[in-house]
Length: 232
Image (cartoon, rainbow, N blue to C red; front, side, top):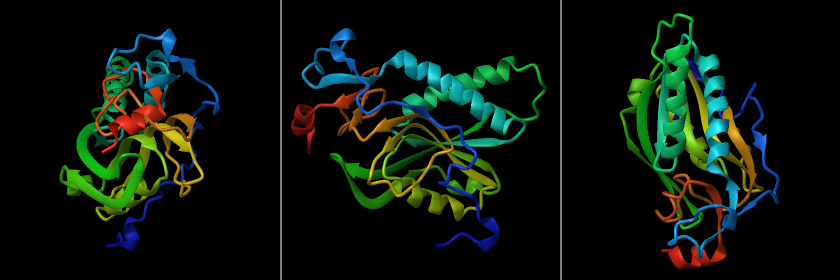
C-alpha cells in the first residue's frame, strides 16, 4: 500500500547530512592487541573499530541528533537485535544532553519504540521482510528516527520505510552506526551515520553471525573460518 499523497516524506536520501567518519578499506587493528574471549580467538583476526572509538563517535552523533530535534517530540524506533548496543549508547548520551542543557525544553528527549526486522540468514539477504514489534500507528504525525545498526544494501530499510510512510509520519530519518561501501547498494543513505566502512562481514558490539559474537565489545571482521563454523 502506497502512502497518501499528502504524507510523502524525504527518506533514504541523506539530505543535509554530515558525512560519516571514513574508515579505509585496509584500516584494521590486530586482534592480538586486544582482549579476545577464548571462545572467539580462533575466529577474530581483525578489529575494525575499538570499543572506545565507537563510544566517542556515538557521543558526537547524539549531539547532532539532539541539536536537530531540539524542542521537537522525537520518536526513536530501535531495530532489534543488532541495534541494541548502538541504541543503548545513543539514548544514554541523549539523556545526559537533555539533563545538562541549560535551555528550557518543552519536550522529553525521545519516545522509545522497538521493532524486529528479519531479512538475513547466514550472510545473504532473503529478500522478504518480516516486521515484528510495536504498533506503528503511534508514529502518525510524529518525527521518527529509525535507529539501525548497519546500512548494507539498503533494501531492508527501503522496504521498512515504505511501511512506515503508510502511517504518515511528520518526518522520517535514519541513524546508523555503520554504512557499508558496497556495489550491492541501492543508493540508500542514512541521515546520522557514525562510520563509513568497506564491504566486510561485521561482528561484535551486538553485530552477529547467526546469533554468535554479539557479546564481543569491538566491531570486528569475521574470518572465513567462522563463517564456515557457524553457518546454518
